[in-house]
Image (cartoon, rainbow, N blue to C red; front, side, top):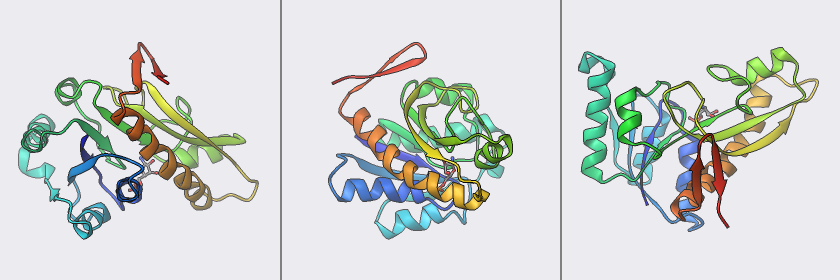
Length: 200
Ligand code: GRF
């Protein structure tokens, strides 16, 4: 499975995928990491593991659609089978989603459909829910709305801060993201409408 990772930030999810591949619990190859942020830690983490890493600057493409075309071109050159969004702070447009229909995953730090969008951990704390977690899903044109692949639950403690909660959620993210990719790589995910069925 040839993977591309899109990341805007620190890249801890990228690192968890790299670790799974290195441990051989995931049979895949990260062919490229692309970021819209030249200072993304994700780019450094990729380079450290000799993975191609590119900053593609949105401002130099005029429109979001041209920017996405540029990304598609790079991915095409690499023969990408699966696009993994890991802390990528942009919403992909229609053309991109259609081009890689059913081949784009995202991770979000809440139990979707609760708390989509930014600051999901803060939203959960402010709402006062007792449980939150994380969700890996296929990306569609909405914000955090595509078919759900895997979720993990994290309980909220009375003294949690946004940071302490985010850290506990992150531990689970690092488990379910490589697992979702593994299921995909073994052809075990079947999308039926809104539902993702995990085949035996
Ligand atoms: C994660 O919490 C992810 O769920 C969210 O952005 C964060 C990215 O963290 N979409 P990292 O860059 O993978 O460390």
